[in-house]
Every structure is written in structure tokens, then in C-alpha cells.
Image (cartoon, rainbow, N blue to C red; front, side):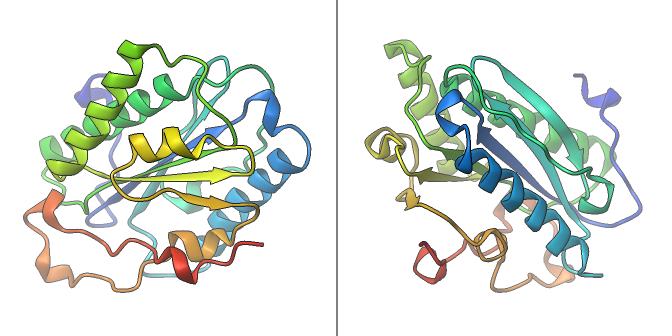
Length: 220
């Protein structure tokens, strides 16, 4: 996907790209996948009701099981269809994380080539298991890629483990402590506490929207 072939909407000002990496392996079947679908659709519908602050957010949704698929390329919420994920297969988490990082890199390159400012991107990993594609080489590559990206201010990475998740692995991958949950309020998860002034763009990756406060997110 070459930068010149990536469509960027120039009409809505600076951008805030968010990649959702969603586990759709067989262990997510039943209540978990239904809750995930409901949560993501609630997020989209909730953000779509606000006229101003969320219109510059662009979401990309990647599902991972045996395969890693971009089921929704970067789009603002009012252009996104209803999400209906199905669970099957294994857990290609390592490949999904590297895919998410690559998608962010290409999206930022497209912004820069078009002269569009942006906030530092977010990547969310939501999983209930452990990776099945995690050779020593893959493990080292994933950890290095996430940590280097964070340290270089290329993106912010969040790991969320629902019941059954390998929290130790998530702790190795993520710079910040992963959040463990059974159910979650997606609206609170993605809400940010302060909106940077529109006059403060210019350094792009250094403009960080406040991460959510895990302590204020309801987990039942």
C-alpha cells in the first residue's frame, strides 16, 4: 500500500489515527465475541454523536485469528459500518501487532506527504489468549518494535486482556501495564480527558492525547 495510493480526507483538519487489534480466535466464541462486537459498535455510535471533538479520529480495525485481516481501513466514525466479528482459529497476535505498527507508519507517511498534522497515534490490542505465532524471533521482534515505537514517540500502545488472556506476555509487550477485565465500558476506555488546543499542532508525534485512567474504567 504505497503512500500515494492511501486516501486521506483533507477537509476535516488534523487527524488522530487509532488502530484496534481485535482477537477473533476460537476462544473468543460466544459471549466474548458478542460483547466485543457490541462494545466496538457502541464506541462508534457514541463517538458519532459528538459533532466536534471526535471528527478527526480515524479508526482502522484489524482482526486476528489464524489470519490477520484489515476489516476496516482508516476511516472517520461516520463512515464506518456496523462491526460483526466471528470467532474461529488460532491467535496470530505477533503478526497482528506488527501489522498494526506498519499500518500506523504508512498512515503517518500519507499525512506527512499531504501536509496534514496529526496527534500521536494509538494502538489498542484486545485479546483473551496467548499468541500461537510466538517463536523466539517473533517475540523479540514484537517486543522491540513496540518498545522502540513508544520510546521514539511513534505511537502509544495499549494492551487489554479479557478473561483468559496471557497477562505476562502482554506485560512483556506493552511499555505500560496492561489492563485486565471481564467487561468494559468502551466509551470510557477511549475517552481522553483534555483536548489539545488546535494551535498546538506542528510536532505531530509529540502531541499526546492523555491516555485513559485505568482506575476510572469500570470492570465487572
